Image 1: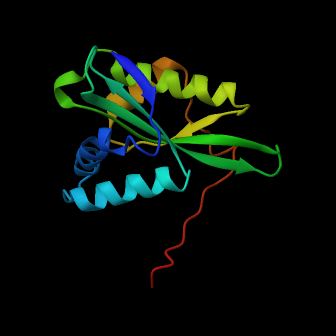
Image 2 (image 1 turned 90 degrees about the horizontal axis):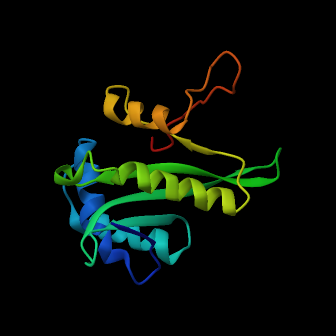
Length: 153
């Protein structure tokens, strides 16, 4: 397996995987939306995407997408590991772990203080992997609370 950071011209490597990622999270399959969303992120330099390729091929079997998270207090750009997906037939081969470690190295090399991620509360496989790698759950008693408000109304 080879992991690459894709550029604006390589979005086609991840469109299909991104669509499958969305399906995993109970969204309807829509390749047009997947293509448009990923390409906009790449064109506008709004995210960093790493893709795992099968050895000796350009067949993508997994990806992770990071978004910047700026901290005024720390005056640093940190990263949110927002998306992680590995083809179902390729799981349990260390691909997800390798993608995460590549993302962590990238963040470290670019001066970040942390990488943050979230996952569904019933995604126990992902939680186990994240904790094995060294991520820790934030303690709501000692860290900031997160609030959200719908602005679509």
